[in-house]
Image (cartoon, rainbow, N blue to C red; front, side, top):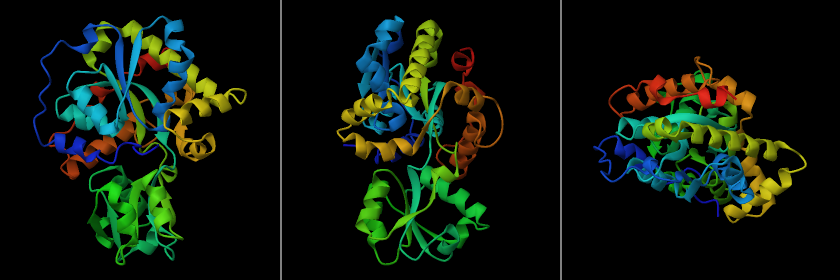
Length: 332
């Protein structure tokens, strides 16, 4: 089932920033064939399954092994040097990098376009209605940042509400409690909250902040340097997948493959896919252009870096330029 869209145990990543990360002194995975990529249950990453089942990597002449993980476990494996690359949010690439597991984002798969949300009880129609009320969410995660942006747009600050710290997987029960007015969570946890509290609905989502949460393929710098030609082929295969998803003649087959990977019916998977904006090649090229704000991966990453510093996720500002290599996409 789709039970781990950017795993509910993702807080482990943020705890990593407070502890030294011991990179395993074993033979690095990049030195051996095949390329090893960790992926997990998020529509923009499940899409890789299309290329896997169609045999497109073999056609492209690149040997790739995809390994399926819960999200946080994929980060652990990458940090331990067991993977060449991993699918993550851009913010989490900074978190693991600050802890010692450096990486380079070479591909933007998508941005969250509604799957991350602030869900409120009946009677609360907007962010402004939260003034003086309690909101439960996992402190320091992307829903926290989403809420802060929503408050700012509404002319409010964090001091206008009371934040109640709660693990993301517990937010459905938290929303059902008498004194909580809203929660922050991503699908499918947010959907579970709405089922548990009849009439609850999203009042602010990542669709209101396009580009706040970019999802990427990020690669061990040594692997990228040693096998750049192979990684270029991986990027090209990705855009073959994107075209297959957007082509009306093949979209049904793509959704069938993706939904089967996570144990859902295609009809149940479509809303989750709809909450994920998979980027076309031209859209990705634009997102790779340096700039401020959420239209740029650079700008988004700078905003997340400031957030991570403010909320003590890590101690030192990250050099965003070192985390991003757009050339394998922009040279296509």
